[in-house]
Length: 484
Image (tube, rainbow, N blue to C red; front, side):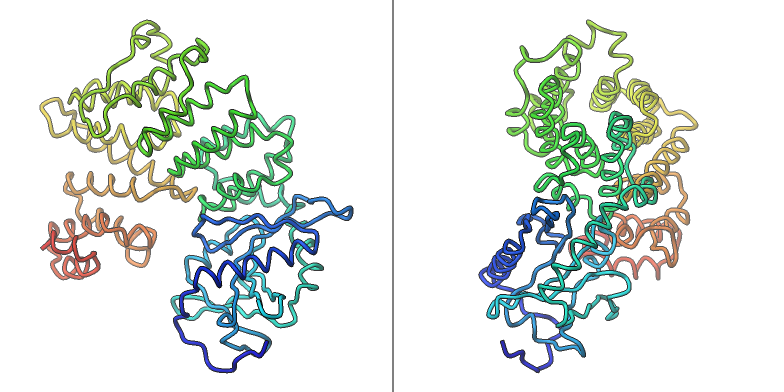
């Protein structure tokens, strides 16, 4: 192929589906000739097209993998560099790729010559272009070089799992940490790999989960069912409920003695996502052990409640039949607390949700639900002097915890800002809503439309009209009209 020497446009033309698939297909063919396996990720929009699993010395899949972003066709070679070609990419991909749990390579496929060139994306190989990034793909990084280098780098990542796990274990949500406990005694290597993989993918949790479900690494075979439960807990904590349901469903096939319990967990994750799918997953009553009956009946009642109906959910008889068990079951207490909110019974809501939080002190979802109940009670005749203070503390606790493991913290921030505004703490609300240069929010949090709208409210209430005007200009057009 003759590489054109014209300067590349700053905004590259969109790849056609045919060209894109041809590049991926050609890459997969070349990789197959090397005896490696390509696991495509056709539905993931994180800038990673799949994983390559290298082979061991005997030609069998090694379990060691690298991630690849594949670009194919002549247009991908339009911008020559001193040693090859420049490849440009967005800032969000920089954050995904440099923080990912395995080596990430950009691959440029020459579909005419049926070969490819590559470069690993690291902090030392990329160059900032201002808002975005570029990396040089050397013409010396050929297929032969990949066959030599990729297994060593992939194997090094695999061998260093315990060291990397120690560095990123704080990036796991509490539910995932608990799910790891059954694995610690007999399969510590699986614990290390899962911790390194999931903790190292906190900035792209959906990609990590989908990768493990689509192409489970060989190390998961030591304890596939329990490993899937860790993946499910990680996904659910990040609000990836469809992926959590898929992980629970797969775990149910690996752990047949717990099948009904795990299918119930899968169904519960789909209640607010796909009610029909949740109903289809729920096992029949006759398959449920007495030990799991309480959870099953609560999930079934929630599934059968009409979508969009704000009235209380019908309470299963099992709640009254086993009061001691109900008292010590977090899901039961949460169910009763949320039903009390639906009835406007604020004291009961606070009581039940407070008990639910006692049963799991690290559950940030329960923290936010209890904060909501306290906030709503504060505006009624049943209010307590500490309602808003406690609600603010709970929201802040949830926010800080989710910050630590890069969870869905914007939801917690929105609730915290609402409480601060109701409590007249306008300056503090502004400080918490503004980005790190002038406040404490992550950039993506500060750019959220609801956070911006609350910041505008706080700025107006504090008398800072200039700031309110500036913030309003950052809102989407529809939200800006509502503020005006």
